[in-house]
Image 1 (cartoon, rainbow, N blue to C red):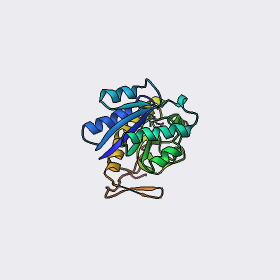
Image 2: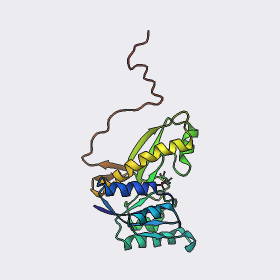
Image 3: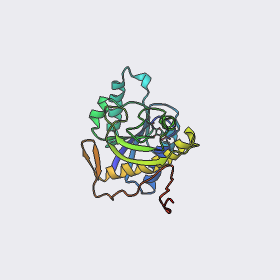
Image 4: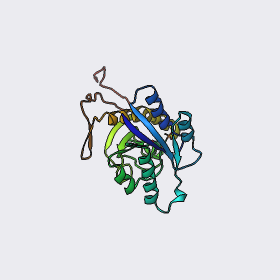
Amino acid sequence: MVDIGVLVSGGGTNLQSIIDSIETKKCSARIKVVISNKTDVFALKRAEKHGIATEVIKKEDFLTRESFDTELAARLKKYGVGLVVLAGFMRIITRPMLEAFPMRIINIHPALLPSFPGLDVQKKAIEHGVKFSGCTVHFVDEGVDSGPIIIQAVVPVKDNDTVETLSKRILDEEHRIYPEAIHIIGEGRLQVLGRRVVLKDGPEPTGALENPPVSIFADKTLP
Ligand code: GAR
């Protein structure tokens, strides 16, 4: 079982899915603390409702990103956190955090990395015209959304999608795969081989998807 600290900046639906998965015993982890860089975000209320300790660290109180991250690492250590889970935490992680938690910080991103790192990625995916998007759980390194990939889930992009409809479809998958990722990390089932993260004794993936699902060869031959 892994002791986690969850970092948030907003609504916290991913935090909620982690809490629910732990409470229903689908994910084996303990949330030691939820830390926000913003006051009054709903994610903090979600944590309080479940009796989880909360802290707020405001960027205005620090001169540099590094000094913010030094304080953040110290607070997480104080709670005995062994794995840091970024759940809609809208800050770039810098060296003091990476050194305090080497390969022990994970993030969820609402796109199929390495496509569409950064912000507003559902809009960018629609505008680019990709046929699939999805979400990615990855280890955090010194780049932006660039660390080794742990797990991804794919969703189709529909012709009539708006940012809202695509975001919702992706978010539903985020809520499924983030607790799974935490669980397999906690079980010590991941092996990191350079950029490749391998699930030890995991099942083989199967199947293929197409979008649009034309399938002209499925049940007829052409005249
Ligand atoms: C999620 O879609 C998450 O993937 C994204 O912010 C949203 C947070 O929602 N994170 C990023 O874009 C990080 N670069 P939530 O607060 O409801 O979990």
